[in-house]
Image 1: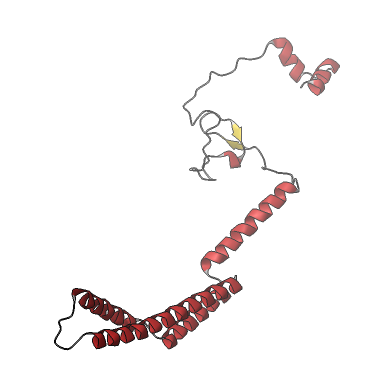
Image 2 (image 1 turned 180 degrees about the vertical axis):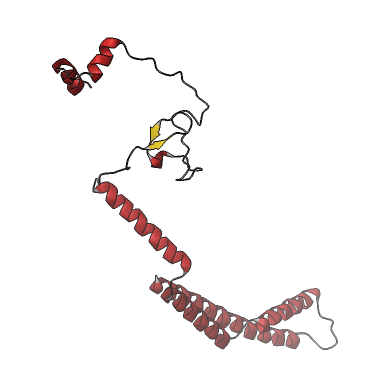
Length: 191
């Protein structure tokens, strides 16, 4: 990253030097052309429209060349810019630190998923305040708190009301509650 910044700064410096040299050469060429035009015009003759336009254009070009910075100024500017870029590369800013920590978190999440780590939600002991259904605490709605959890998967916070279940038939109830062999076998093999 550092080397790419340096090479970019070097390319910019070279381009500025080349532009400065070209502008210096063009300025010298304009002066020579003006001398040539003045020598060609005879004294007493009025200059043509073309020569007036050329003189005006050359004057504008001269002003542009004079306003451009010299090679020394360009070199100083490039040196300062290179130093600034090196200082930025050496000191990490808040954004890069945050990005690094975010990447590390994502890597650790992927590693946990790949390791097939067992997931444990804790006890299923959080009760819905509307229908008394049991939930894990992590199933609560994001707008609720841990001290007063609200759930939306059971009764939509009291919007859905189901009738209470009737008692099972006597034969089924006996299979679930009795301690005889037939009931025990039923409870162990129920799927």
